[in-house]
Length: 179
Image 1: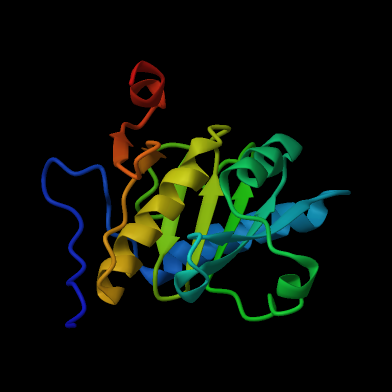
Image 2: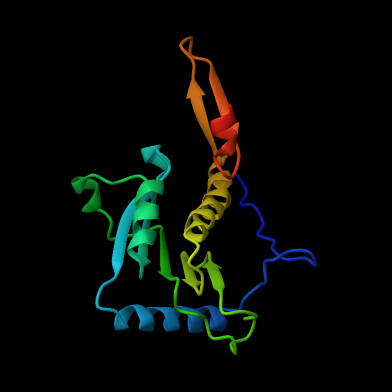
């Protein structure tokens, strides 16, 4: 299967293309901040239940509640699986309470969520919203899985007693509660 083209932007899009230098400035700022802390939190987890198509993700946080949030969002590896986590498929660095440098090119606020697919990294600065990590990883899965001929969905499902399956779509979880 031919890889899908990457196209972001457009006049009405909130996505702003960022050059490598700006990404690295934000990444270095974040790593320097994390290195200044007495304690950071690290989660090694999987995305995707199918072992053949799992994505190994490491998430490095400044806040414990972000670690707990992603602990509940992702799949936990066994101790044996953790031994093979030296080669990661994707890494998120989250220094939520630390702002980006607003004088850096492309920065319009103190918040910056930077996704670099070539480096397989996401950098989060200046936002306490834990959902940025989840939404970023959904974006990664929605980018990677179609190239493997897999339809990636943001949904839940339920199987009836006769084996019939219902899919529930919705961003907030309300769709699942109302079904």
